[in-house]
Amino acid sequence: MIISIANQKGGVGKTTTAINLAAAFALRNKRTLLVDLDPQANSTMSYLDAMVLEKSMYDVFVDGALSLSDVIRPSTQPNLWIAPSRIALAKLEARLVGELDSHFKLKDRLAAVESNYDVIVIDCPPALGLLTVNALVASTHLLIPIQSSYFALEGTDDLLETIEKVRSRANPQLRILGVVITMHDKRTSLARDIRQQIDKVFGKKVFKTVITKSVRLEESPAYKESIFRFAPESSGATEYYRLCEEVMDRV
Ligand SMILES: Nc1ncnc2c1ncn2[C@@H]1O[C@H](COP(=O)(O)OP(=O)(O)OP(=O)(O)O)[C@@H](O)[C@H]1O
Ligand SMILES: [Mg+2]
Image (cartoon, rainbow, N blue to C red; front, top):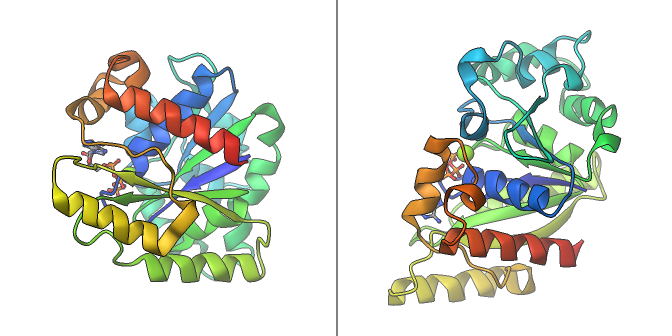
């Protein structure tokens, strides 16, 4: 099972979902690899000290002699490994321009290591460029976080169009696993309206578990911990654990 966490809108909760969903799988004794494909490297920094990393996913993409297993590092949590990103990934597009297999690079590299893991979670950047397309081509499933905000559904048309393009040729088996609503504020009527709008567009694809706004979820990356270690009693921990259960029920 290879799950991309993607939405080209920035700041909607992709990384928060990727790091904590991966941690939830690891807690359930699934050998889990978290692949960071965002040049911002937020997933990487949530678990590793980026200063000591020599090689990153960028090197895996451009250096044919380097294997993905050469850059994978263990996190401090059992069953959880990280394939780190670095800002260098931002120049990947320019570097791979003209290469015929540029969309298949990640798929090819994952093939060599995927049997070592039960689950692979890919954190995508906020764009629909080469990196996100590589993730979609390599994935069996896609999970879309949508922020509970007035502009929640803006841009989802473009995302769905990209998914269809990938499905039509490069990866017909790609499935939309579901949509998770993030940063929800139960107290406001606006949030309830937004929930209804999202339900209208995505119907049964919307996960029952909603991720509410929580300061704990914002804080945990700074302490290099998942929400399950940083604040195991928090709403965020309960919600991401439930989301993981729903994901497992759906695959
Ligand atoms: N449920 C939540 N409650 C409170 N804050 C949250 C929640 N989820 C995410 N955040 C915060 O919102 C900000 C954006 O979240 P996150 O980094 O996960 O989004 P993203 O989609 O990965 O962003 P980008 O597009 O830049 O990669 C972060 O500061 C994060 O800590
Ligand atoms: Mg992110």
